[in-house]
Image (cartoon, rainbow over all chains, first blue to last red; front, side, top):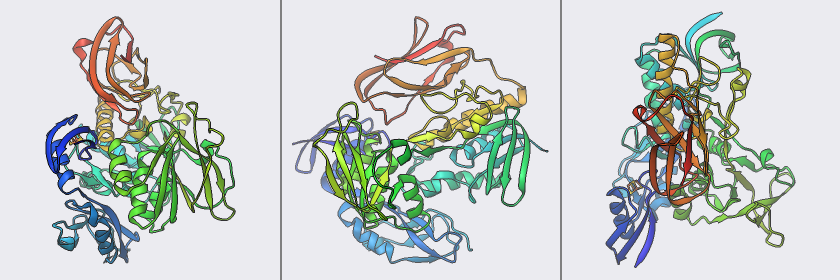
Length: 120
Length: 411
Ligand code: SF4
């Protein structure tokens, strides 16, 4: 089978023409680097994404901090991950790299703070 | 009047990178003026990841990318005044600013670095007919409300324009539980990056309608619907194709414009193509000692390149401050066939520089050709060239002469 993938690994956004059988990649063309092939292989087996969102902060100079995942999670679990993150509330101060949830939903990805918020 | 060697107007990614490079080059008397309460500029609200891939080899969020520069600026003890709005810059480099803490400031600078970034085009610029209800936001304003202020802007959302921030907000609002009904783009090709179409729209089943625009806005207090229609190649709505879409929110992602009110006040000449300053290979504007880089000069796709450009600016500004002048740049660089704009627009012909450009329309299997007089300086083959992607080409000095103008075109 044939399909064109847009690699999202870097801003080049290569369009990768792929021939595949089931989850086996037969050939790829159009990728500027080997990561493109890895991306396509992963897309066929188990597409994964990272997400970024925000978490409420109490007693801070701003009402929110931002957070992201340290590694991608299965695409189908994104909204479960959002629900879990939305249950969190932090108290200022928070610092970049603080772990909000370790190994979220057992998916081998941590939720970390990406913005410093000082105490009000 | 306060005196400073270098005053940097804007503490976003360009201003921060420029300050640090100036310091490295031995300039000690630096002042950053920032309008907001905190440094970091627009990156503070860009919480998605993908920043820093080129510079740091990892995918950071906007605030993390900014913080790496802010930490170094603080470590270096570079002076910053935040909550400080610059009101005027003269051609003699006198800056007037209003500071929340220090009142009205007047500063004589030896060099002024313009790093104010850009602003969004608004509904007014589009002249879309209809009522004026609540619920219409530019993408960046919606991003500010949602990511900084914890205010959700709406539930049933239509997005006009396929700029990157609009697509990023489509995903963001979907994650926050909104229903994004579609993205409508008047052009026949998307204006944002392919990876954002993939990871922000396709991943969430959000349709992208090319050659479509909003022709009517309805609602009294709050937006109740928009009418969309298909457009012909001259962007004119085609009668009979109208469709009414109920929604409470319309997000506009219809372009960014370099923020140049202050540049104009200083007498800096602007390029109608970029809407930013005419600059030479040193990022120097038409006013000696006033420099510009980053989104205030031309709108970038990636912050990594904003930082690089600002550092190149700082190299030149440091030379200007230490040597008293820079090589004269008498040769013009012209945007030829299918090239939307070029930066820089003037060169000396004796030094290497980085040429930045955008093509006018999506093209495949083309070459970007740089020519000086009859001589070909550079030729780069491209499998695809998109207006959404800025092209940057290093130009070596040994190929140049100092007497002929340059042209850049697509073949
Ligand atoms: S294939 Fe390589 S260069 Fe192309 S988008 Fe993917 S990671 Fe980037």
